[in-house]
Length: 235
Image (cartoon, rainbow, N blue to C red; front, top):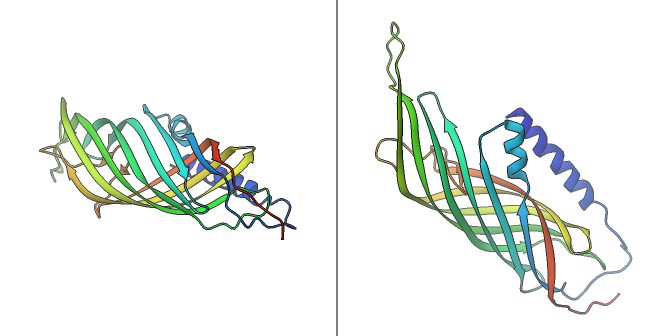
């Protein structure tokens, strides 16, 4: 966990340092940036899995479409396969998810800049299955160790719906190439659970806590394809 937090902190510093390098502050862009389609991938998931040595395979693609100077329609979709455990059980999860929503850019770009400080919201849906690998019975017996029960039973056709509140930044590091980072607060709306244990991990939602909240983050590399260029002028 400490290694993961250190990696996240370093990537945040790199993203913020790039974002701080503003150029040409003597001119101001008064018209909107180009309308564009942007497509990319979350590069944090394979990095975190490698650092934690987890038997985990996950990926996420991110897209957005700029339809005004400040507003973006956003779609994120992906797949996850993860092994989880707590004090009494071990299980694995695999499934797919999609998230639909919007971003709003709070940053006032100067001439030649196309960076973003964004806030937004998402609706998320995931369909997945758990496989219960093993469990021990939770008892207060101080004299005998609780036996480990091997199971291997799969619980298919599970699902979850949730809302996300998102904030982050996107920086144009090279022409039309963007580095982004964001964090989200996830609020569970509904879920379908197995009969005999809880959903502690949901693909796309991540770890589910007892208050039905979760936290998500991503670090993305994406490329923008202009759809229609707008005009700008100096003042």
